[in-house]
Amino acid sequence: MLWSLFKLVLFVCAVAAMAFGASLLMETNGGIRLEAVGMEINLGPLQSVIALIVLLVALWLVLKLIGLLRATWLVINGDETALTRFLGRRRLAKGYDALADGMMALASGEGRLAMVKAERAERYLERPELTNLLTAQAAEMAGDRKKAEETYKALITDDRTRFVGVRGILRQRLADGDTDTALVLAKSAFALKPKHEETQDVLLKLQADSEDWSGARETLAAKFKHGALPRDVHKRRDAVLALSEVKAAEEPTASTQDTVMKANKASPELVPAAVLAADVYMEKGQPRQAVKAIKAAWTKAPHPDLAAAFAAIEPDETPQARIKRFEMLRKLHPDADETRMLLAELHIAAEDFPEARRALGDLAETHLTVRVATLMAAIEKGEGAKDPVVKGWLARAVTAPRGPSWVCDNCQHISGEWVSSCPNCGAIDSMTWAEPPEQEFTLPGGADMLPLLVGSDDSDPAEEEIMDAVIVVEDEPQPDVAPDAPPEEAAPEAELAEPKP
Ligand SMILES: [Zn+2]
Image (tube, rainbow, N blue to C red):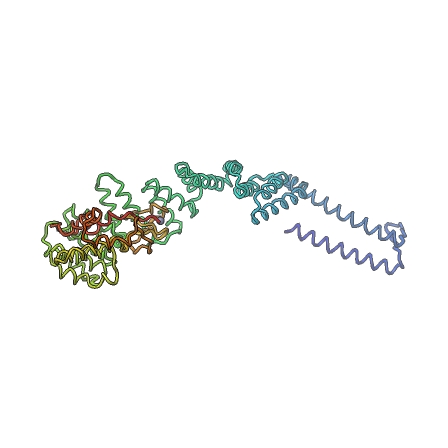
């Protein structure tokens, strides 16, 4: 600052001196007469101009000399690079020019050129931590993996650039699919920069993939601590990961039970947490608490797993008693599709087929799914309808949309059961109970023919198979809502291959 001010003042003085010189030249009729210390010098016009140039050169030299003296002074005072800086200013200028060119080349997608410029910049600047950054990115862009890796390794050796180096190699390992090494690298990158959001996400995903649930929960906690996650999202995701931790444990212990309770408390609307919590309460002999947990989740949205868990609370009750007990859930969402199907199932189990049909209402027309069509087949069969009618419904079940499933918000992957991280894209807490997007569903051999085949009188082996699968519904004397999976949907769904996105 002071130095710049000094230069400015000197420059103003020089300009003033020149102006004074010029006015003197005018006055003296093209010549200068200088008088100093008793000596008198007369200069003609040409000589005056030459003298002026000499004066300017001298001024420039003086400035340089002052710079040198200043650098020397700084060296004496401990700033060791001051002299080299002074002497290497030109080199520096060339170096930075090359660096700028390199960055420009990088920005315009010319990886090779950027590499050349980075090399040139390094020759002048000798600042590997700076030029290596450019080289690494340029090498990546140019597809020179070996060079990129070499450079990243060099970056790791410097404290200032270690993180960049680790991150670079981490990305390469991820691209290779070498997740074991990537996990180790992600952990060290996270240790270097726990606030770095991308690293947090990568580490979290790798930990979830390797089923290191407790590690994943720690990373999630760090994410929350550093403000990358809102409190409610953290609470829910932590519950989600905690459930995976519990599911991974071979034997339920007091500690896993405790984890389940906490997960359920943190996220009461999370269906799998409520189901597991109900299990735990039942084991502890607290059915009222189990009911409470299920009810809390059902209040948010009805779900067949909740119904199954609710049924399991009283495994030996009669179908009529069960219908009565389910009234508690029914009135929370009386018009929801799930409630209507559930009631239909309960009435089928009680062999009250007209009531089952009433419960289902117009679902068969408004929202036909595999489950609705199967229920309709069961109702028709129970009411003594002719075989072609029953078979007609079964045929529709085969091609009907599958209805709500666990669908990944991120990639639309459909999962048969709830999972904490999507098996397809690895996103955490992305599974939502929803209607999957309409998918083109074609059966080999032409599904269009199916109604004709099934509707014909000749019995066909394929048709028998479908019938057998569904007969379970009617022949099942036990309550229809089993703890694991309701048979109504389990049987026909097993026939359908899971569509892969
Ligand atoms: Zn996904």
